[in-house]
Image (cartoon, rainbow, N blue to C red; front, top):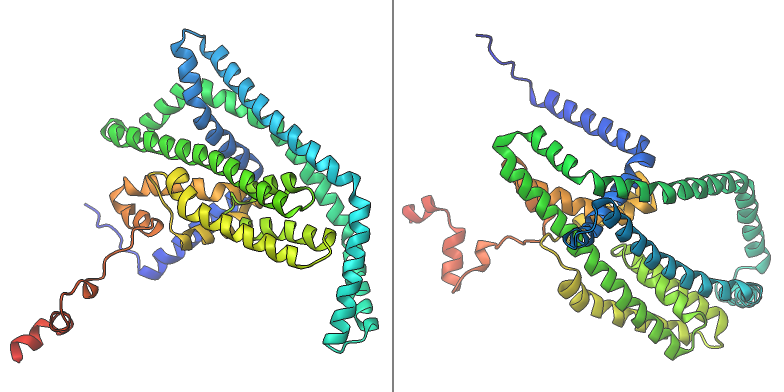
Length: 377
């Protein structure tokens, strides 16, 4: 019987790093295929209960899927139409906003040149240099933008097809996973699939409710302050809030800029910041724990890392997918013994440090003194 070859640690580590590099490269190269599939899979999981409900009403499977997707399309189309109508109001007064922005910019430049004792000519020359660099790279940027828009339109038409096929072939896909992992692991595979489905459904349902509540709070706060385009900015802020930690910063920056441009006093921008900060406190301490929270929770450190990682991998769509994908990975890790430490690292369960569980200073000192020294003393 041949003896198994034991590889040195550095060889194992090198092979592991090469494997990770190849895997990430494949994900990056095939992003245009993988990202729409993941979006379609997540949406299909959310729509599946409606399909099951219609099937219980003795409706044909194909017809149930079509009716569910049609209802979802009507809701999305209504929301998109409302946002477009609000955005069209902004476009009508775009020239006025540019003029006001120019005035504010000139005043700010005059203040900066006086406060920092920099001649306005130097500031203008610097701006001209930056403008020239932007125009130089503008052609390629426009080409990339048009290509991205074209790819986006293709994805918009492809995702519904993926959703229909995933819902239609659901029994085949489930049987495929059971066959891959064998009958011995059938119970574990079923548990992982069911828990993953529950996590995604709860997360996205809660997220939708959170978006509606935050949009109402944002819009109400901006309307009270009399900020122009309050409803549009409130909805955009709620959608950006889906991206944890980063989206909130962008969401508050937009209405602050509009307040600086359209209002006479810069204090309105401060008021916007205060209102958004109060809404963020409500969101973090009540809405997210009570409504969005699911069985799987990801700690803040991992959340920030995966947002940047998936953003670098797949761009903005990757940021939106980062938390659901990480939650699915945690579900899988929690059910496999070898990967349970990884699942523990991804979660937000803080281990109890024994030294803090003391009743007196004497007990704490005894915990710090090794057993050998206790016997010697």
